[in-house]
Length: 260
Image (tube, rainbow, N blue to C red; front, side, top):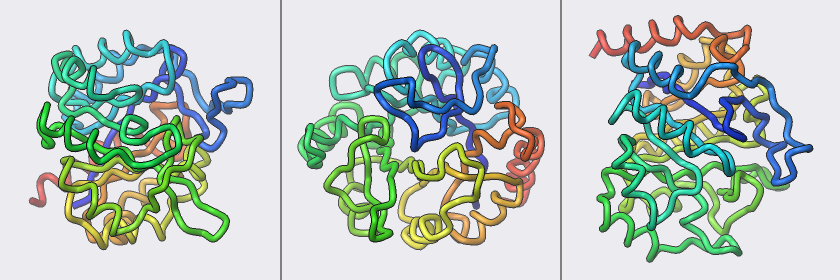
């Protein structure tokens, strides 16, 4: 069954909500929907209190490690962490309290070619059951979805389809997929993408991007046959939004849990 999964997105040491398609190395072009006065640890405590498991802490660029570590310390084993993580530091983040580490750019070379040897090496080193692969994507001119890296700026060789999911699944426990073109816009989810992911359904998948109402949780549940979880960011009142109440998302999960 679909669940709401929380997030903590960190940018320049602050909890923020960003329009994903605008994220660039030159921060003047990055559009910020929300910047919190609260710490990442505050959000982690709240998620722990409400037993929202499987949320992700994403470090968007440098200057975020301290905030991420403080969040993990608030809920050891309750949050995943990603952003700048590779074979050399993955175990350190697990030791810091992450349930899983999320890999993105480390899986590719500078030209976007998938490094299967890196994937298999890190899976052997820390266990595939502790790995999440971030296959966040953008739409190409022909409408197909392509996996991106480098904070959604650089396309890789991998199309986002069932073949790619099959190829990578032996190396990880879950997938995290931001639809970067609609991330932060509150304009609606990518229904075609959610349906494709749900039809695959062989590992847990969390989708993020475009959610704008509580009905989107039900919509994702229906489109994916319950195989895809949903993250809601900019629309959530917890992040300055006015479209979705956090407490309603918590109640949604509780009802789902009770139904099982």
